[in-house]
Length: 406
Image (cartoon, rainbow, N blue to C red; front, side, top):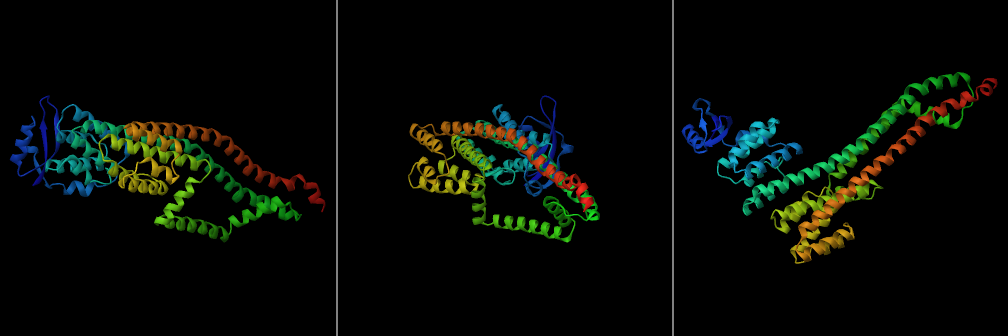
């Protein structure tokens, strides 16, 4: 089988371009005519062996926004009755990202070669995660591919919105904190030395805050500063190396959950991600045990991943889902009780979605509250740092008369 590029005209006069896998150029023409297209024979050219170029070029990560747009548009076209291959050709042609366009063409080639949509997606794990492939497979088995794709689009949109709100809320304090550090560094490196030279000429005893500030300035301009920077870089590298191990990753994630304010936000985000992902998977028809395995891999925190893994083992042994989650101690009682009610009433998916919506709103409220609290704290911090430097510099000047008379 060989891949051919082609150009063809549809019934409404629009030109379509794409790639087909076939035995020969004549087979490509026959396939296009069967789809109701009028091919241009001169445009049909051999591209190479099926799948190889696209996989080699396109097996890379794609932006979540591109994946979301692809999913929603695919759902719309499948629902409208367009053939899967034609839909993929259209999406590949209009994709702005060349890498993503190569991914879509690779999927189309594999589907043209006889694979199912989910099997073709699985060959691009960096672009389509396990959750995506599993839901598409369930949609194909249940004959509701467009409905599952819509669920996937809603899921991707909700998770992207939550990430966007957290990032936007953290942008201001991060930038403000960086500016404060730059101001303090500028004063210590360029202003303090000038004052230190004046104080040295006066030869008087300086107040303790001024001595401490000059010591910091001298250290920052000497070789000792390099030692401090090297130690900081080394510490970061050691922490990253420790975090790459299984034990280190678990301990660091546990430490994150114990942080003041941020730990509570991370815990709520983890609970929301768990419930929304599990709800989306089970609603689309994925078996609960397989769904638990996928949720474990997408938990985003090793502490929660361990709790989910142990809960999955308990469910495999015949227990309900709520009991092992409650025993883990990582999930709030409200969550486990609502899950228990959902299991008893047969409305687990609905209950999980309600929990996720509640915790999403909790995270948004906490982030907004934290943002309003951080602003005055940053102002106070800036006043303390910059004001402390200025006061330490001017304390000797305020006593200038006594210094000169000594």
